[in-house]
Image (tube, rainbow, N blue to C red; front, top):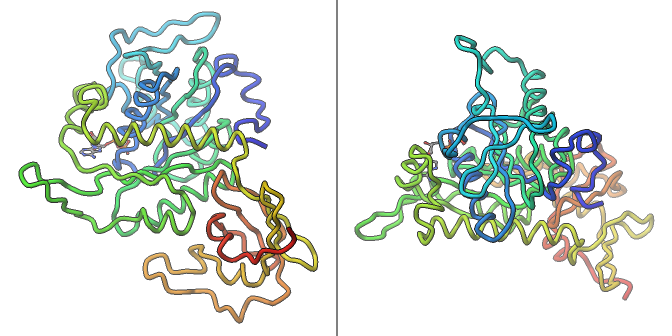
Length: 374
Ligand code: ADP
């Protein structure tokens, strides 16, 4: 089932979302990594490619949209019982930060988790978004209850994860991918922000926080859309000035990276909708895990071999790359209890030994599988 066709009672009750084709989450494990900066520039990059775009700031505790983009008018009004979104340079906008709070009220600060998700929900579904190709959702930072509940409530098509290249960020990215995976929302791209600093004089690149995690993301999860954005003063200045860098300096290489991200996200989502050229994986007693490719070719994989090659955080040390799983501990007769596709790039497997964190990119499976029936 295409991810955006998940049955969702919320969308039936939300007339404002009826004509939105794709809801695309931009998420991060921590605050301050540049998630909102990426969400805003991504929205304008999609708009620049001729699409109808909205941007929803789901961060109730720290709404940043009103600072990063300044619509000419911030007066909110309603029409047919729905809030009319604000608009700046052709992109529709909504944020808790645009909603006037009573003087002296402590606003979101006093709200607890369930109230927060309710408020976000009401604002999202009570806004008249009209016809949109993409509604970009700037998620609240983290992978806790609020984020999980929101991911359950909002019928997301896909997610993009933003991180910085510090040592622990690989673990953070994995947490994000797994949170979305639990609800069958594919992660289609990873953005490493503040990845390096480029000297304005000589062009030398300084990777201040090390080489980053992009290669490991590609290898382990098969997510090929991995982008890096440098530390760049114009990004923070444009954020403070209320005009996205993509509009200020459209030809700059950083703006072009946002354009490439938008293009990759759109292509990936279109591929997801059409099913792509990926195999279907199933378990067949006597054969093991059987991959059926669109051209009819079938490949068999021994389940015990697959289980022993699991790359998850419990089986491989994320920081050293050393194996944590003793291959001897995997019984030869192990079998998958559940196999389901993860987006366009991998299959997630639950095993009869109770292990439920295995993710195998199709690229990787293709290297394991021995061709069988033609
Ligand atoms: P988050 O949404 O993750 O909390 P923001 O997008 O609000 O993060 O960014 C936090 C701060 O860092 C903002 O002031 C923003 O302008 C600045 N910033 C983000 N990315 C960069 C970058 N690549 N270079 C310089 N400043 C950046």
